[in-house]
Amino acid sequence: MFKMSNFLQMFLIGCSVLVISGCGTGQQKKEDKNATEQKTEIAAEFVKEQSELLAKANQEVHNINQKLVELNDKIHANQVKGHRLTQAQNTEIDEIEKIRASLNPQIHQIKKVPQEQWEDFKTSFEKDIEDVKSKIDVLLNELQVK
Image 1: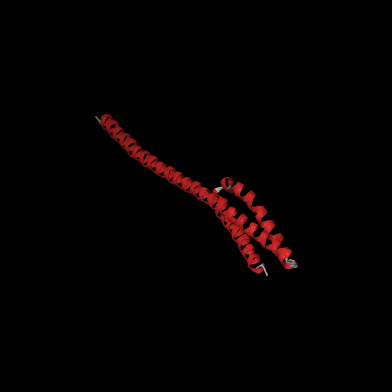
Image 2: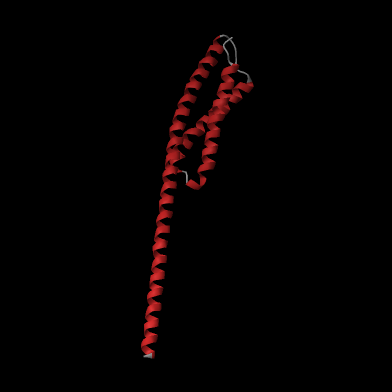
């Protein structure tokens, strides 16, 4: 009787351990599923941000190119009238060309930037776009045809 009672107690303890550990496994699976869903959502948001930046970049480069055409027209019109660019304006044009040339490789990198580096890349890229636009606008204002 004593052996049977011990055996029954051990059996019930074993079943209890299995039930408890089984619940933990179910909870772990639920947590794993939630973590996977969160990672998927984060990855989808990242891809969306990349696509949005790429679309914005292409539009901004198009706008920059139009401004450069306008700038070239103003430079030519001023030269026809005998007005030459100052050394500072020539230096600014060189800086614009340098920044503008750096945009294309950055555009091609947009889809390749790791998520860990995304914010730094995006901030730097957007700053470059704003810088080149600002520099062009300053020159356009300076070069009013006289």
